[in-house]
Image (cartoon, rainbow, N blue to C red; front, side, top):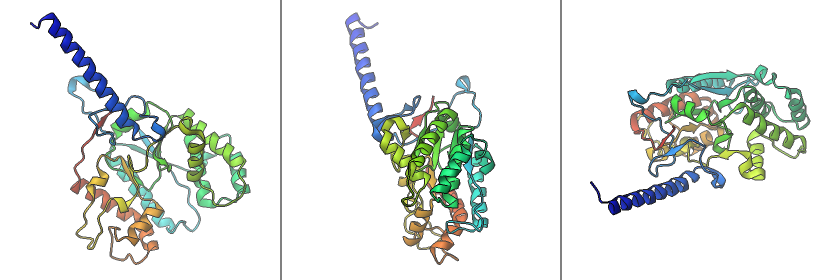
Length: 330
């Protein structure tokens, strides 16, 4: 048995160590979210590997009940296709998106314009977009905000695919509800409850109402303006490249031969998802990092084959990169 003075010493050391761990944890986690606003409530840091959201392994005696969350996306066809991709190319990308998220245990749902029309402000928003002459593709990007405001939950672009992000992590994060954009102001992967989706959607509509027809308008640029104008009050915005990999240029080393592809696993370590955006796909082609060589002679060819490139990259990720986590979700 320890002497009384020794017990007191051990207790004080324990308090100091706990305090230091708390400070280190808080400092590390705030690096993920812009403005130093910190982590979504409920995230528990493990060591200083702070850029990862890991599935918590539970013993049989500590089993946690959870229901597979739904990852939503929005797609309403633009007649004739758009953005360098045919209608068939978009459909292939949707199928790849659906398969990728389901492989991680998620339910999936594709929202359409009819879902956006359920929102009481659909006609109001449509009128504003008409006045501003927003093109067909970008007005659909705004409509998805109305659709998500009706239900709440997770939403991703259909060119965003999970890496180290299974359904249980998504279910645990979903309970906190606060508007959280995991690729800064780029709305490629967002989680919020219904109330929070509606709050940010109304901010968008309000900002659009006073907007003049002075150039290109997209939901991404409006969300960026909301973030800059409101700061922490806008919601939580993960710092760029901390949770979502911004495309193939950050995933692959230069590919000389499509049968000898090497992923840069360091860039993918502990990341939740990868975003195959139009811009990053074009950049990948230009830099020789597009994983398909045969039949790809220009950027338009690469855009049309994004679904195949995504499938190849995700298979390479599973084969080449170890998945190891650093954040547990209680």
